[in-house]
Image 1 (cartoon, rainbow over the protein chains, first blue to last red):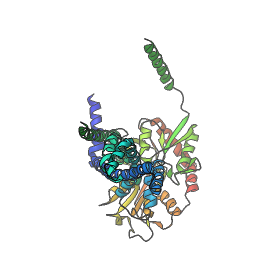
Image 2 (cartoon, rainbow over the protein chains, first blue to last red):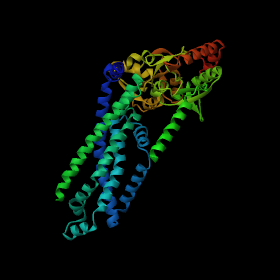
Image 3 (cartoon, rainbow over the protein chains, first blue to last red):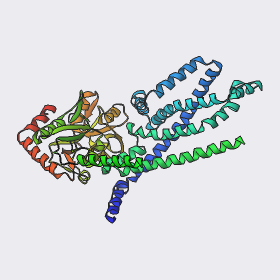
Image 4 (spheres, chains in turn yellow, red):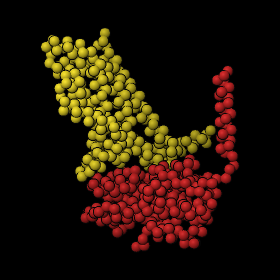
Length: 233
Length: 245
């Protein structure tokens, strides 16, 4: 038993303490969180714009060209894997510019996430009874005002669980950013593995950290949900 | 009750199967793990993995009377693959290093090579000592990666594949690439505007990695390598892929 513990302690020392290897994990976590936060902001912004255009088209039949562009965006982004998009953006679109990789990753993951957020938000907008829109319009609100003050606040509350889901997916998807030589959390674990040749411990550590971050996110989204529900009573 | 019977049956079946699995049948295959992105040592030609390492492994397998199976995986997973028994040996242009020796045994070396620096033609970097403070591209887990880390004030960009590092060099995303000499020659022959610095970064030897507890295979491989070196087979395989310079 004590031999086993000693072996475990030695492996822990090799994987995390020696040569300050834990730095790969902490720096990696920082990169992962940064990519996720900025990609989330970009994704939600893009998603809302696309959802509003698409639902405006569905409800009023206007914005034909914008709606077409949005549909192409959704089809292309949802139809290709995010890691392929990341590589295309890094080696293809930004081929001739020495661009900060963080920006590449935020664009790739943000644009990708935006497509999913768009459909989530659209489903929220479409779920609001059309009586709400009619009521808003008959009270003298314009279509845009009805959207901003009446429809979207209700829709947002409905789609919050799905948005939380998308956030978790986004966080975990950033684990492919190692493909463009970014040192995110997953890559940090890979670098340690390439030094210590220990298959298990770095992977378990990385998995545990993702899990903790996701649990934290679930908690925060849950709190937000409860707060928004207060206005129901 | 019924569930219990089914469970018992399933367990019994499982145990019989696992017994059959570890029955003392003679091994007939020799599994070689490699990362087939490393020309001319190992690369894909059609759906075949070919190259110096593949042919040497084939020669060893023939000598031992085993059938060679090649598994292609990421370079940084190779040692874990032999450690966990998923492969018998690694031939992947792998250099003997202290930290690797802690986890696997190495056969006698079968070839001598070097780490070199690739830069763009006309770059300000003219010798390895100019790499201080620069952005250096490497393949994750290779000796180039380990050496690059020791350069002062350097930013190491670790790619999964050697050619991705070279691609990034072409796009000015890194200033230089440290990689093994022979793949470097292939990469510069395929891409215009790249040169290899005359001064080599380090000289090193490739060997075959085998699990620590598999000393039997280690001895067989060493004996086989000695035979193949003596007969000139290894030399002729290497010459077939690398033109003498």
